[in-house]
Image 1 (cartoon, rainbow, N blue to C red):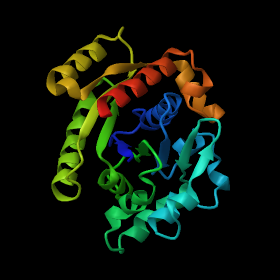
Image 2 (image 1 turned 180 degrees about the vertical axis):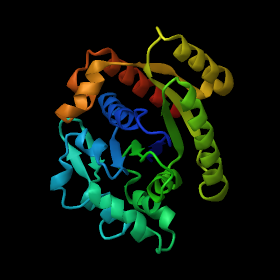
Image 3 (image 1 turned 90 degrees about the vertical axis):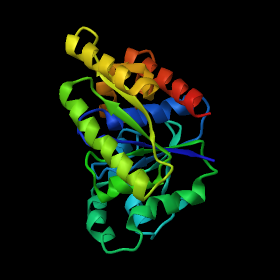
Length: 254
């Protein structure tokens, strides 16, 4: 049965999509069956998985509105080795359309039940806001992976996210918890980043992943080639760090 994880942070630009696609590719490389769900209308995780969002006949939008199943909608990314439930701008309309529907926050959870035995991991890339889309992701997930930069404002945003997760846990999804915090775009030469990293470890203990993702040019270049850094340049420091992270995830969960 699949373990379902949201990659979430209410702050934008913290590497959610980079983490989702690279973790998906890393888990695939260590022999796991992976479904990557793109819940962001920008569709960056879809494009970053070598799938053209402009040519998809069906998307996660159709799944949320129950006009198509995940089995009908998913696309295999041959280059990356995992399945993609893609998104494009059409998904932005789902926010409005879901408001009037029954059990609107449980649509994704219901859809994933049909494929839970087909995968070892389902990774959900959430938009950078607490929207109906993010809520669908949180209600469907067993846990949350939080990528964050080691900066002061990131700590403030983390407090908001922890409160949100507590509310969802209390009211909608008793299984939901924070699996771990992943330090990304890390530069040990910057004193503030080292201090914030130490604060995180002091406060959250083993909830902070051992793996640290360094700031890396090749990771930043990879999306322009439509693929994760793990497949684009496996020898890059950032790619190797995501492979370590994939291995650490498997050890934590299994």
